[in-house]
Length: 526
Image 1 (spheres, rainbow, N blue to C red):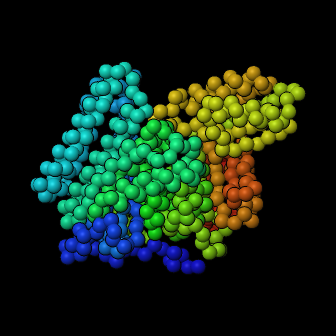
Image 2 (image 1 turned 90 degrees about the vertical axis):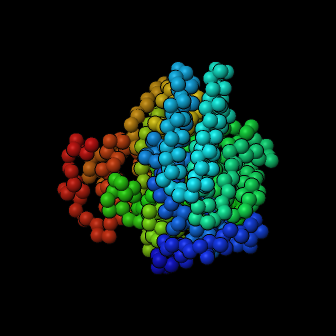
Image 3 (image 1 turned 135 degrees about the vertical axis):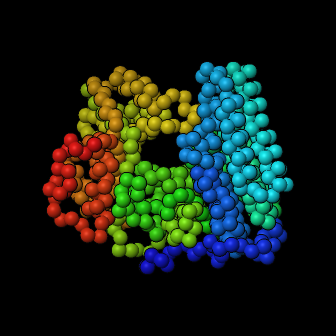
């Protein structure tokens, strides 16, 4: 199949000015309008840099042909690290540690949003109304933090209330820009969503997911015009969203909204053209993938790609949602179309990805301990200390496990990963003869389109790493999923990824051994 046949067709007026005569039709859109739904999700940095462009060239053109539901992250005017959500979490952290003054942080958030309103909104009436909402939201955050300081503790529910203000601010701003362009838009606050079901065990609980999706759908369908939905949908009393999902919950919210509305498409709008064969920031010759299956996208996100949150992809896969990943800076670009199934193609390999911040935990069993009992023991200890395992290799006398050690964990984790690993090691020493941990590792993975391609891909990986004289610590060759990979030291991972991408994905491969052509000295690969 020709790749262009799978492009998502841009809306009729995409990228062109939308006349007021066309916008008049948008004002009358109500809950009963018999048009299919399209859900659009926008990240914080996209909204911080391209809010007006998003309204004029993405939302309004799509709204001429479909009913549009918009899901927003909290705005980041500069970088994600300095975004609204991170600063709100910083305010909570300061309150929890030394009681330092947090009002300056909230004042900066308020000033930044007011300056954005003054820049983006020309109508005095709409701008004044928006600024009042901004000040009201920030005053509510200060009130919540003052109450927590007075009580001497900050609960997960309190953190959720503070963090959710970032999404509300973002939605108010985007709705105001839509209103200025003559379109009826309403901020839909789902930050205190209470599902009509019992507390969840996990996001694999289909009944729970369907209940949350139905609640979201009901709220969205109850407003006229374009609903602008907060990406934070805190679950009370089931638990805090940051604890259950972590960062990236807006992607999950968008997938749940799309599920509840039975949307024809879920659009993830970012500041990249789509999904590539490798991270284009580190691999200059990475190529855009015009289409993927949802299973392939799930593998990429699980093993290091940050395009879409894993939980959102799980929901899309289970509900057969069609997704597209597009660039807000280039709305006419093809992007990447993600479908439940695609026709077979000549491409055997999909992409290469890497996951940093890994550790290898090697445990040698005590004499007389049966294999099943020993494995069960290790599993129970790791589960107790909330440590996940990416890869396992076993032998007669021991087990090696690749464990992710993320630097930036979700707020609310009771202890950092390295502390929890230390406690797990202490518990394992009681039941084993030796425990060894190796940190600063990385997991390199190649996602294949066909299971028959995995042998070739793994052979290429091992050949390249051998030529580069990069030690391989663990090897992954899935029996079910078409994924292969290995664990190596993190300092070699970026360079190894570039070379592997060249050998596996370049149109013209280099036949000579890598060691003869690219950095033969291992010490130079740092």
